[in-house]
Amino acid sequence: MKDSTPEAKRKKSFEFGKNWSHFLAVLGETQIAEAERSLKSMLEVETLEGKTFLDIGSGSGLFSLAAMRMGAKRVHSFDYDPQSVACTQEVKQRYSPNATHWVVERGDVLDEEYMQSLGQYDIVYAWGVLHHTGQMWRALKNAALPVRKGGKLFIAIYNDQGWISRIWLLVKRTYNAMSGFTRLLITIPVLFLSWTPRSVKDVLRGKPFHSWRTYHKQRGMSPWHDVVDWVGGYPFEVAKPQEILDFYRQRGYEIKRLETVRGHGCNQFVFYKADK
Image 1: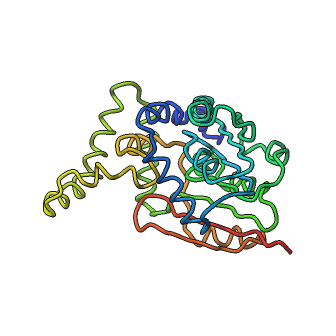
Image 2: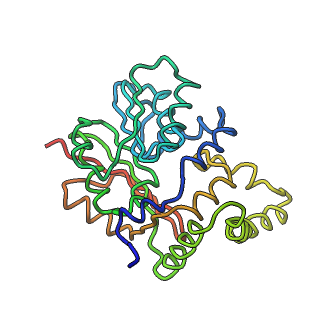
């Protein structure tokens, strides 16, 4: 019998850390500055001085580093994927080797006991992570546990496009069932599908390849690594913005900032935990 449990899906999941390790080769000051800009914009702050920052699913470690550079007094980064943990540790070693107030470790957002053990944070950040756990709603619930009263929860969750999302789920399952160069049979067509319209527009505007060259300004990700991350990202769950809003409102959170997408991609939410 085919095992379709969340844990089975997780064992077949995409190796996000492997993709992030390639991304570190192009990580530089431009990407770091853009990550800082993203945090400042969505959190509506100029500094994190005096604040604590929890990075759930730290991936490359880019946003943990951004929080450090914005003055956070304590940063805790964790990821379920050992290779992602290694990437975050490499970024820490590269940019903040002596920072004792930045902790990097392996952890699981689905483990409620672990999440409770982390303590309370002013900012809890989980961008594009919780929908890859195989148990998204459980992950959403647990992600809120470390938010202190008066703190903020910044998450990003894939937009539910109905039948289109079901097709992408099939694509992702197929990709992860393949290996090596055979995965290019999916990745390259998706690359052309997503980039041809933008490339044509750039040519018509007299700026060929402008979007490709400046794409890192959308959260610091290179175009190729973003496509690989999207195609391979499995487990894969989605939600409509209203579902996320209702879920957290029932738990005493207020929405402070919301940015939605029309197609595939992530809706971004910044929630505030009332300090009553």
